[in-house]
Length: 91
Image (cartoon, rainbow, N blue to C red; front, side, top):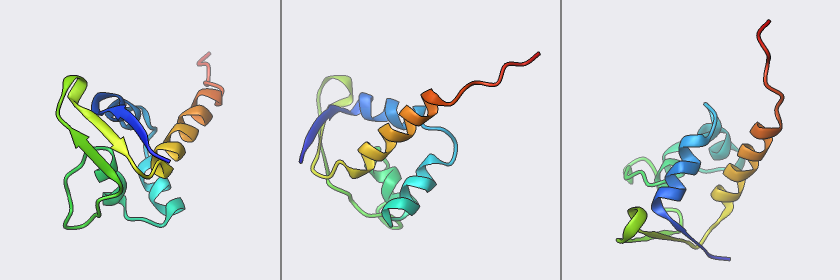
């Protein structure tokens, strides 16, 4: 299933992820950390692979067509879990 999203939206999702989430996604999906970073707009193809994204120039950083939504879906799950985590109130 493909998904279309703006590049800026994709980067906002990546920037909202908690520390360590990129490594967690990579481990869970059996891909390298650089591959996950490339999915979110990175350009390290020496250590990571291309992972089913196509970027077209345009407004909001351009349009990104994701042919594989697995990394995006896991990132959104992590963000949903993060929002459900009760915050610690300092007394």
